[in-house]
Length: 115
Image (cartoon, rainbow, N blue to C red; front, top):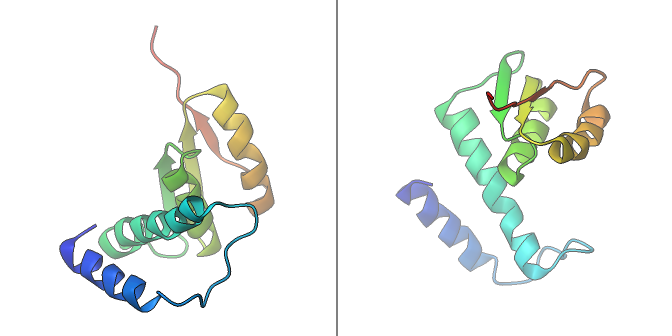
């Protein structure tokens, strides 16, 4: 996150000292506080720096990570074709249901190490 983005976020957070937003059910304060960071990171990198547009495609490496799942969801919601790489079978199993909810044809590319 660039310095100007950090300053802007700090101003928002200072104003947000009052409880305008309800805590998400089932999440601790720390877990809920981390949610905006992943969305800001994806937005800044994919849309502001990368200038991705609806109708374009994106390959998300680490698609089952926090940043990866956020990128998959945001990009799909904004009309991009999303491909994701995942390194382990357990992570493929975790990502597949989310992709099925988002699209009729999930695109998961397993990363296999060269033997």
